[in-house]
Length: 467
Ligand code: BGP
Image (cartoon, rainbow, N blue to C red; front, side):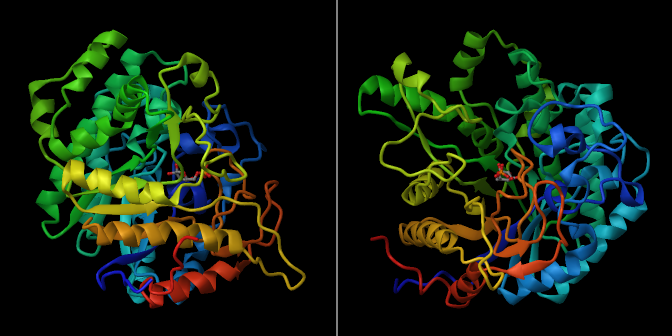
């Protein structure tokens, strides 16, 4: 297209500590909730036995290989890397009086490396994990005490890295507790709605407190939220489907509404009443929530449909989000429906709703890559996916939406969050490791590596229009 993305647009990729670092108990790190899920995949706490295989214990060994990986990101022209800090590296038990210096020093080195390559870090405070001790001793976010432990952690890292890290996110996909309570909040899967929403409330207060701390301690920084952008369309244009879709979309919109506006939206009053949920919200909580985020960030992988017809609802996909399939869309090998135009729609929708800058901090295609005879992955399917999504981001910018940047998910192959597979690959860089943990861990650029590099260099000028 003739359009070019603005010079200031941040380009890069997004990773999470628990899916790349490995070194799960190295240098004083404590166990996190992510270390005790079944082989690291979504699910409930499983007691670890000596000798148990957990693919995340090594993951892709980013803990030791970050210089090589960051150099490859730099070769692609990244101006931004979204990464997370493992809370349990800094406070191994979550409630320790003092932080773990070795953990703090590790991220100093990672930020040094990024600085060397002029890559702006965008740091998530908590990406799908918390110190295990907090889940076991305090029932995770069900306890109000955890707000204090989290703010102590946030303050520690803001003070340590604030001079060089100017872009922050609070909780990854903060709405995930609706679907995966252990991953999101350290709660058992069968927790009741009262507990779940009280935990969510504590997390929202903690998020707002972190925003306040960031504003006070690093005045020139920007801090955003992060939501799983699970947008639903009405299955038909029947008015009942429209209303059902409105109600269902508000389940995830609630989080951004609170974080961007500073108070609970009025539609939640009815929802809580219907669920029989009575939250404890103190006057101090209400004050805390008033500190709002500077920008909205979200992940975008798929859209789905909602329907008021119970028979249609029965067809809802068994995946975590319970969406009805859209007959106009194709799905990935994992059943995630691919919808580039929906990204343009969502960007416009969120900008209309909040009038705040937006950042797409996750998007990408998980696929089973195959090495050709020369040992290279020719991932034209991934190139097509990214081309089509980025084209629509360009359209949204031309629609007038303020978009700060785009970090594709898993620029280097990493462990899947939902399935703990290595074979669900997202990367521009292939990592030699299989689901059983075999392989040399060697890195190798895929065809998409060179495509993304050209795309960044030309600021999207070579993106192909949809057919
Ligand atoms: C998001 C998570 C990421 C990431 C991604 C892809 O929900 O924030 O951590 O993993 O989804 O999901 P998966 O790894 O299950 O393919």
